[in-house]
Image 1: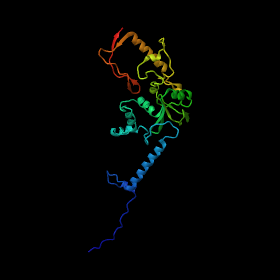
Image 2 (image 1 turned 60 degrees about the horizontal axis):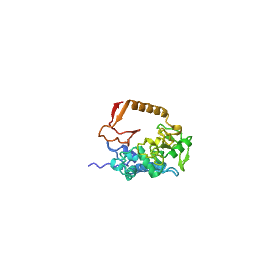
Image 3 (image 1 turned 180 degrees about the vertical axis):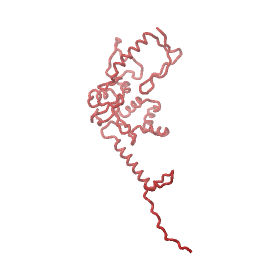
Image 4 (image 1 turned 60 degrees about the vertical axis):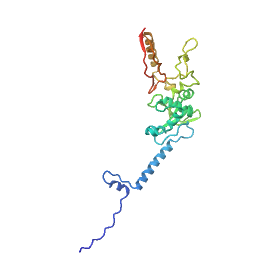
Length: 278
C-alpha cells in the first residue's frame, strides 16, 4: 500500500493585474479591489473636470456645465433623458419646443433668462454670448484690440487677454459669440421686430436710412470681408428680376411663412409663386 506523498502548500493568488491576464478566454475577471481602483480613478477624473469647468468668480452667468462635456452633454443622452435636461426644461417652461427651434432662438431665450451677456461651456471652452447691440459694439469696436483674435469659425472672436466687459471678467482665450439674430430683434431698437416691415429703413421722403444698429455682416475689425460684394450682387439680382418679371401668389394660396428655417443661414420655407414677364 503506497503512502501519500508530501502535501503541496496551496498556491497563493497572484495580484489583481495578473489575475486579469489569467482570466478565461472571452471573460474579463475583475476583483473588487481592481473595480474600486477604477471607480476612484473615474471619480477623480470627473472631479478634476468639474473643478476646471465650474464657473469662476466674475464671469457672466449661465447654466451649470456638466463634467467633461460642458452644457451640451444632453445631446449624448437618449431621448427620454434628454427631455429632462436643462435645455428642455428652460425652453418648455417658456412654451417653446426645443426640438424645432434654431440656435439663434435658443440663445435669445437664454439671454432673457441670464441677461444680455451670458456664458456656457462647450467641453472645456468658455463661450460668452453678446445679445444686445451695446455690448457687441463695446467688445468688437471700442475694445477691438482685445476681442480681435479670430478662430476657424466665422463671426466668433477670441479674447487675447483678460478683460472686464460691463462688470464681467472675460478670461483670456474665451470665445466671444455675438448673437446678431437677437440684436436685430431687440424691441428697444427696432419697431415691430418680428414683422416684415421695410419702412423702418425709410424716412418720410422715402429715402434710405442707414442705421448703425443694423449689422448683418458684423462690426468692427472682424466685419465680413465680402460685405460690399454681397450688397452689390443682391442689388443687381433683385433689380434685374423686378425689371423683367412680375411676381404674385397663386390664387387661393396662403401667404408664405415668414419665420424662416434655421441652419447655417436663415432660409425661407418652401412656397409657390407665379412669375410672368413684364
